[in-house]
Image 1 (tube, rainbow, N blue to C red):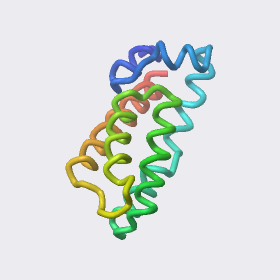
Image 2: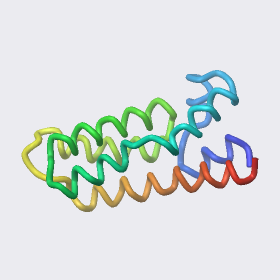
Image 3: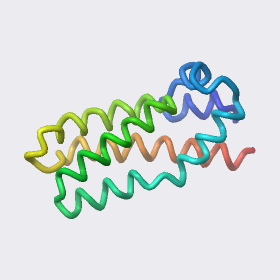
Image 4: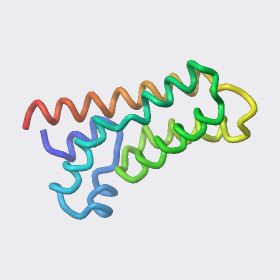
Length: 118
């Protein structure tokens, strides 16, 4: 599997990542680091604890990481959740969080498949 195929599988933009990070080796380096990023776990914990302020911060961080790596589908899902949480007055919408979970799963599955074939 190529990096482009990995990005296609995760609903990302390889071209955008290439424009930002310039080389496949840099893209691969940061994509692999994403697997160790604690933001999604932190978001899940904050939502489970009902901490709206931390939920907002973690959703916003996930959106930013996804944007920097051109994980387009995850960026959109995290952005939708971030905007819902922005007023910091109500807990995360379950449907929006389900969308984040689905998009996150697609990214992780694609990265792991790429890693396995490397």
